[in-house]
Image 1: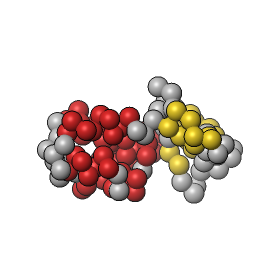
Image 2: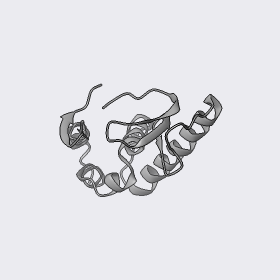
Image 3: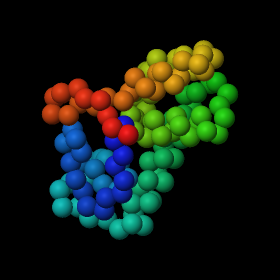
Image 4: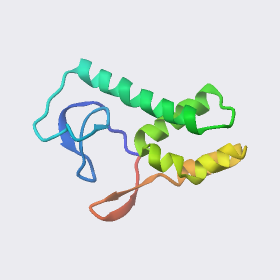
Length: 121
């Protein structure tokens, strides 16, 4: 996993997707776009709320707060479609909590310029 931090000027991520703030993407993000810290925090709150709603809707297993927060972070970074169709979610909803750490580790790669690479922490 790559730690992005907060950037107030839009930049292309490793896949060329225009990004701003704390990992916010969308059709409105483009070269030259600049935002304030306040806008960055509002975008983050909105994006995190969407990820939380996805976790709350999709996970049927009982979660601790820490487990829920870890899954929200996962969905924030990978997106709801990937989460919803993941083996991770299926196993978790089957009650196989022990498999979740290994499933999360499967997502530590990204494609950079067409090449699959292990992410960094």
